[in-house]
Amino acid sequence: MNLRVRFAPSPTGQLHIGGVRTALFNFLFARNNNGKFLVRIEDTDRERSKQEYTDQICDSLEWLGLNWDDELVFQSMRTERYQDVVANLLKQGKAYRCFASRDELEIIRKETGSYQYPGIWRDRSAGEIKTELSKGTPYTIRLRSPQVGTTKLDDIIYGNIHVANSELDDFILIRSDGSPVYNLVVAVDDHDMNISHVIRGEDHVSNTPKQILIYQALNWDIPNFAHLPMILGSDGKRLSKRHGATGLQSYRDKGYQPIALLNYLALLGWNPGTEQEIMHSVELISKFRLDQVHKKSAIFDQKKLDWISGQYLARQKNQDILSGIRNIQPHWGQSRNGDYCSSVIELLKCRSRSLMELIEQSEYFFNDPDNYNPENVKTFWEDDAGTILETLLEKLNKLSDWESSAIEIEFKNLMNKNHFALGQIMKPVRFAICGTVNGPSLYSVMALLGRDSCIYRIDSALNFLENN
Image 1: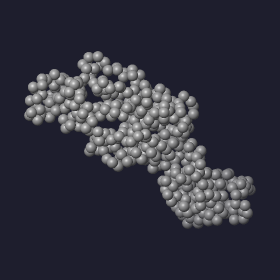
Image 2: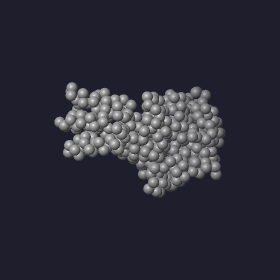
Image 3: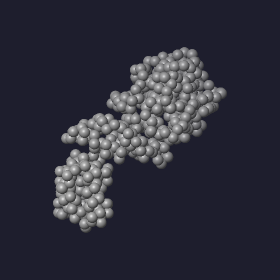
Image 4: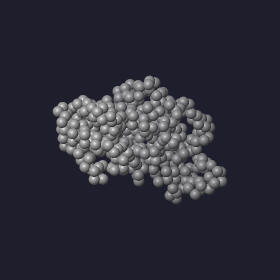
């Protein structure tokens, strides 16, 4: 069997992080089994579907490296095919026209307390149907579903699922406005695309029995089904905007890199069977198995994503990080040469969780602090801080070797000679030079910034504190 899977997003909004996980699992499964990964744009919702969302979805998949095989398939271009399929079902008596109005069905629902269609047009005569057609009465087209027996689904993840056919009414295939319904177009598309495995979210489990009935009515082979567990927020509810950034574009804008996102999402519901958590694309592909996907819903953990993202940054080549930064902010670091920028990255990449966080932390490497917050100063600025800075300033002016090791020795000499704690020196100096009290090795920062810049910044901080 030629293995073929598909990812079928609707272009009614930007690609959601849950959709990315679905696309990823399809992609990994296909590549692991030398199969094909296809993309179908389900754009039959004419009011909400927009080209900008289609472009964004395709751009996002390409950015992630989830490159699809063959041409894109657009449902909106296949209307005639769906109509032909239903016409064939009508001809064989496997579907029928239903002229029941919405008001009529609502009355029946109130009387019976059930939303199941009662089959009132299932066995009408040809004459009755002809009469309604001649009057131009609107109608839907419904599948003539079996009324006894069971529809069985052997799900790769959830196992055997049996649904009594008595619970599946004669559901609509074509609406009264002539538009096909979701379950019809999905079944037809998957058949025509020769999809061997349908891998999608568990919210589609309720649709699958209906799609199986359509396959059976058309005498088509039924694909294998695998329904993925849902992704939940930290509160146990379905992941949504209230949980923060759930659209892929927002993570991209925040500087998360594709492989870090894919690595994290792969672990949402899938157990690779090892304790290894950091895996590149080749490893993800080689290890991925559908039968290792859990049934239990996965919890989206922002801290875990940040940790994985940080691990990738720490291991990445500085030049590659620089290229990624320039994709977000083209002018970053252009006032300095490439070696300097690489040194900045080397100091910050182990302390950053994303490219944007690295960019934000790097500000003082390119610009002097110009707005010391007095409230921040109060948290560490002691009475002797000014004396410490002035004494250090004098020592630094005389320092012949401006290297991190030499700077460190000068700090320790000052500490030992004056019986200062290291923190008494480090905090005010870092604040004076960086405008913050956190960061990488201060000695390395000072060595990179250079003597003139450090002396200027300490002197400026002293002037600021004297006047505030």
